[in-house]
Each structure stands twice: as structure tokens, then as C-alpha cells.
Image 1: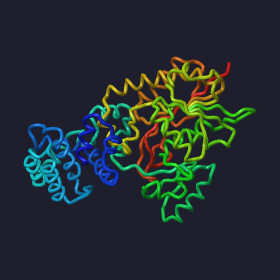
Image 2: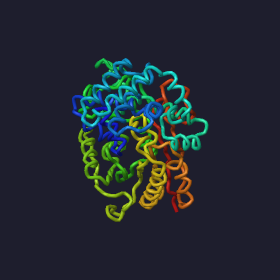
Image 3: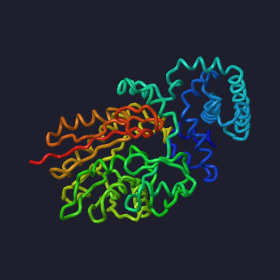
Image 4: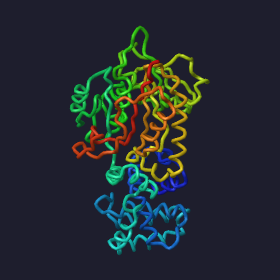
Length: 430
């Protein structure tokens, strides 16, 4: 099943869809193995090229590469190497698509066990095998972050932590930490309202989750709402706030959590009707309300009422190059041409939404990307086109970071978090 998911991802299916096809009772285990295989796929493919002169058919190649990805590093392997080989060969025999290649897979894996050290040493010379990212991705990171690219790639191959956002309308960080302790769970505070768990848990095991006391949200993503809303105060009327690309609703809810009831009115836009329903579900669990609109943010004439917004959150579509710890399939699904295409879409959204900000209001542009074309270069181009804005203090590029006590970069104050970019823009008056 893990190999079948890998074959689907190689065919262009997202990892979330590929693993969703697995029977629910088996999904957690299959996804865990699949994520590990995706994190070491570059190494596995390099090893397969050493073991086979020709690329096997897709199903057989996916099974062989899955086994190699799981077996190449004994310290990380979930099973003993010989057990992995036996399981892979048995799986090949049971599947009509791979039955004819079972002997070939067996021969390749047995040779790998015999010549492991030599084969690994040979593949060490290949950057894609060493870093387990496409070559273009590695080269772009070298160019964008010449001092930190190795740290970013290393972080990308780690498992991301589970971080919660405490709903400050319903409690406090300290109060929720006590609830976690009472439930036998451990965590520690990060940021203004976050708690990083010592160990990931199903949300059903989190105290008060069903009642909206907390949400799951990475520490970097938790920066967005407070950054946008800091210092904005409601006068006679509630603040008008737009979440322009809102699904699944985490940031929409966080915007509401930053203000007292009645001080803020949030409009949440989402172009995909199916994804917009997730916003409704998120808000219902938290006991909050927003105006959810199914519409294209880049076409305000179709949905805007003409009244300017005090604040706009634009969490723009991007390569997701900052969240590959959580979505290890992204690096293999993306193409270099996607960066330019998405940068054009981001620029279009910025230009469409900027006129909707009132003078003195703000727009927060953010992406879960570490590529500068989707971050600082995008904002430089924005200011070249628009002379009525200024940049307020913003984190800029946050690079993915491992470990709470890691020797953090100056722009990584949160310790363990995903990669993000933030630019807070203020429209000047007059």
C-alpha cells in the first residue's frame, strides 16, 4: 500500500489524496512509512540506478524504491533490513502488477544488502541522493540562502512537531498546559498562544479540542493573525477584516481569536466550494462566526461590496517549499516552472487586493515558501508598482528550524517551525 501511494504521487497525485485512498484503519501506519520513503526518495532512486540498468515498470519501481528508502539507513529503518526485503518480495508476488518482477526485486535488494556500504558511498557523490531534494530545488536554495541552504535541507528531512494554538477567548496557555499535564501529555509554550507537544497525538486525545479550546497550527503560521492585527483598534464600528485565501480556516479563526467579540467582522474567501466547507467546520468547532464567501480573490468586482477593509490577510498560493516536513511529497511534485507561475499569481492577487485596503489600513502578504521569488522579491516588485505603501516591521523569510534549543538564526525566534515569509504593508494616507 505504501508503494502504491508512492506510485500515485509519482503520477502527479498529491500525498493527501494518495494516502486518503488507504483503508482508514491502516492509514496512519501506511502514511508514516510513506512519509519516510518520500523523505529519502532521492537516495533510493540513486541506489536503484546502481542496482538496475533499466528503470522497472512504475509499480515495481515504486515498490523497489520504497524498500530501498526504508532500508538504506539502518538507524532510521522501521524494520530489520532482511525483514524489509522479505516483505517487499512477498508484496511483489501478491500484486498482479508486480508479480512478474518479484525475482528482479529480490535480486536487487539482496545485492543491496551484500554491497550496501559500497553502494551508499557511490551515491553519496550525487547531490539529489545526499539531500533528497530535486537538483533544481537545491540550486535555488543555494542561490537564495547561500549561508543556510544546508540547514534548510536538513530540517526538511526531519519530522515536524505537533504545535497547538490555544483559543485565548476560551482559556490561557498556562491553563491549557495544566489540562495537558492532567491528561498525561507534555508540552511547552511557543509564541503568544502556542504549545508544542512533546509527542504528536490524535486530536481526539487533546483535552477540549472538540469544544474549541485549541487548534493545530504550526508556530510560524501562528504569527500571521497577531502581526496583522497588532495596534488596530475598533472605533465606533467593528474592524472589517478579509482573509483572502482562507481554507481550511485556521487563520480565519485566529483572526477572530485576537479580538473581543463584536470588535471584528471577518470575511473569509475561498475559491473552491469543497474547501470552503472546511472553514465552516473549523469555525463551528470553535464557536465563532465569519462571513464565508466562495469567490476568486483576484476578481473583487464579483464579490466586494465597495467598502474598504481595515486589514487584509493574503496567505497566497505558493510552492509550499517551507512545509515539506509536513508534506514530503511536495518536493517531488513541484517543477521549477511552478515557482514563476505561482509568483505571477501572487502578484496578481496583491494588485487586485491592494485597492481594497483603506488609507491607514494594512495588508499582510505571507507564503509558506522559502524561495525569495515568492517572498522578498515579490514585495520588492510590489513597491516598484505601488508608491502609496510602506513596509512595517515584519519577520521576512523564516527558515525551517529543528529543535527548540537549536542554535537559531536571528530571524527564527520560535525555534522549531516551518518555513514562511511575512511582509506587513501599510497604505499611506493622502
